Length: 309
Image (cartoon, rainbow, N blue to C red; front, side, top):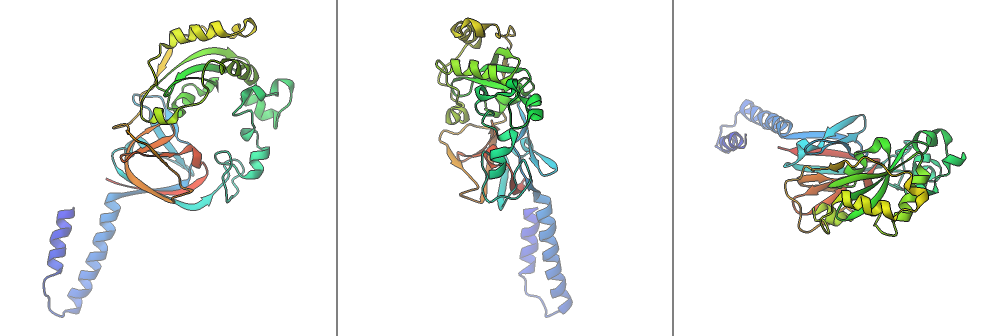
């Protein structure tokens, strides 16, 4: 395509007679060429984004919700992409426009009132839904008063965490875990949080995101043995929730090469982020120059995305 354009441009530079028709035709042809050229080479999508939806596969498949559609992100790996933040942010709960995003996508009012922004999301031990106390009991019955898993996962280092039963393995993929195993199964969020708090005396509950994105584990772990060790640490009253399933989940991510050095970027500092997409892990886009972009952090941001073949 570029060779065709080069020949055409050379022809355009040749001396021509002062022919009005030829001049008009040349300008129209140039405009038409660029329209066709850009349409062939560029794929554009726009809308308010949410955290990427993932599909457990080999490797993991990612889809970016943008308004009413989804963008298949794996297809963009290896391509040059351009992400432009338009300046518009909409609350992911009420939909209203907000100048500032709180708690990964909420307006300030919803941060204070919406059940999905409750402190129990980050600290499950604080859930009181089993006592009939919640921001919204109907929401709590669907999210807090259901089976929960306490798990051990490797994402840079060994960590303990909590997730709803229907979020396996999505929760682990969102954290960029390479391996995970279920430790305990509880009937509500509060009890799972109590187990997690107890085990935090022995394990981290945070993801080492830099090591995770560099695909560097602090050490090798045998999750079956780690589960046995963690089980023995629990007091008797909590051991009744131990889960007998010892399946070890392994996740492989669509990454060409992992970066040696990492630099985090954000639309709050740079409204236009572009570069060669080298891969995706967790909720991060990884660029070939080591820059990484946390998509989940920008829930509700209105983006315009283009990609060149």
